[in-house]
Length: 118
Image 1 (tube, one colour):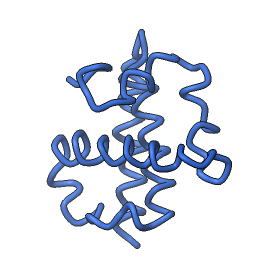
Image 2 (tube, helix red, strand yellow):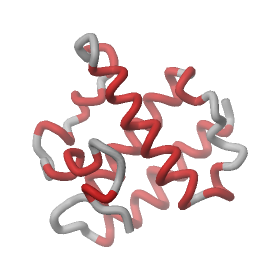
Image 3 (tube, helix red, strand yellow):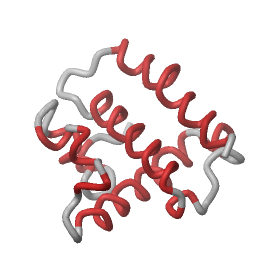
Image 4 (cartoon, helix red, strand yellow):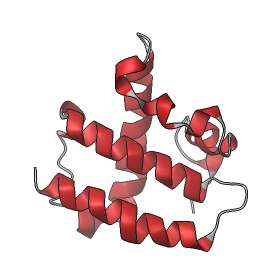
């Protein structure tokens, strides 16, 4: 299991706040980010999608999340929200099994389905 510092830069910070500012949806609101932040956030998101999602769920994602996803705003919004939920679930100090079940059954499947329809 990838935890905090074992993953790409930003993963440790994503869970370290444990419900504080870093995990806030406002941190991923693309329209209000200052100049340099969108590139940093996109890099963090790209690392997570390619390092975690594609390696852990290759069959689910093969035809659903295309390599050009960073060029599509709707994909960036969907995947950023999924990344937030994943961070809150798996990088929490005391993760709840229910949260993991919700992430797999509710959050990830919905995002994957919607991205496959575009």
